[in-house]
Amino acid sequence: MTSIRDHFLEHAGRYIQNTNGRIGLTEPKGPSENILFGMGNPLLDITAVVDKDFLDKYSLKPNDQILAEDKHKELFDELVKKFKVEYHAGGSTQNSIKVAQWMIQQPYKAATFFGCIGTDTFGEILKKKAAEAHVDAHYYEQNEQTTGTCAVCITGSNRSLVANLAAANCYKKEKHLDMDKNWTLVEKARVYYIAVLQSYHPSVLRADLLKPFSFLTQGFFLTVSPESVLKVANHASENNRIFTLNLSAPFISQFYKESLMKVMPYIDILFGNETEAATFAREQGFETEDIKEIARKTQALPKVNQKRQRIVIFTQGREDTIMATVCLSLALLAESEVTAFAVLDQDQKEIVDTNGAGDAFVGGFLSQLVSDKPLTECIRAGHYAASVIIRRTGCTFPEKPDFH
Image (cartoon, rainbow, N blue to C red):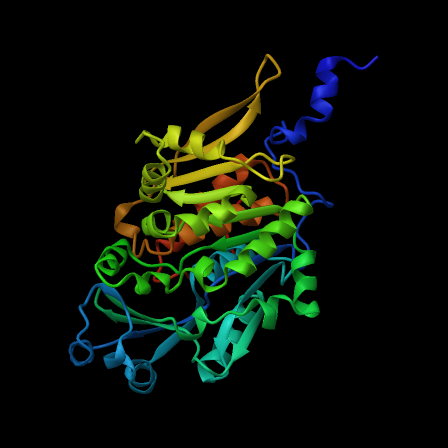
């Protein structure tokens, strides 16, 4: 006769994460082509060492990050013509997908990416760079807006970034995601990731809050194509696959609470940093500033797919990474559990650029998740990937990872 305990454990997947610390994929383990799917705002990063005259011409500060204005229209072409440039496939979600593919290595095209670009030279370069990263990128190409770009202007140890989102804000569900050949790729995936916002330095986000709120919609994929996000989220939930999302910036929880909370019930894994977590807690009325308690309360928010309990992961820079999950108590009750993970020791002198750390952490985490590795290994891979990226300019990495 089956005991009550055995019966509960047999069906415990409805209430808790697998007792071996894995979240549990619904298909055979191990990475395969198109197992990981990302959708977001793609940018072509254009990096060059420039001079002071170039910065002065476009009113750029040596160490800053801004959205392009009319006076910056000629900047990108001049940067290419006047200086030796490097191109990289960028944008927050695409960065994470790219890092995940780098960590996975084989097979190529384990990671898929959807986004919108223009039918122009920069678009062709972006497609080439995504292919070089072995990401299976399928862009919606349109001719109304040019390909989104980010100029990275280096002077000494300083970097001045100018982002022109352009086509990145033009994704159309009915013209791309709904097409059979593209939706087939969505169906092949077992893990889905969306960063709701294009990567920006926090100082830029604070500056933008002082501008008309229309600026805040730029780079916010839940605003660009909310119907696309919900279609993918619903598909993941109905098929018991893993849907993950990144809070991306504090103002998302403030000014786009309704859009965010529409997708929250579908989220299996939520990423964020300590500032984003604190803002989310205030907006949700959690009445606590303790990040562990915020993670616990966020984990307990209503969820559609009860076969998977939500996992919440908050990074804190050099401080411990916090993860909230659900575990089985001795009394056979599903209880939330919060764990802290120390980050890797890092020589501060080796740190070059921390802007891509969050994207890299997610990429590292996802690279192990698609192989159904224990959550502790996913966290460790995230810490490793972030430690590599912050020692380099931009979200770049060596040919192969050294992760064991």
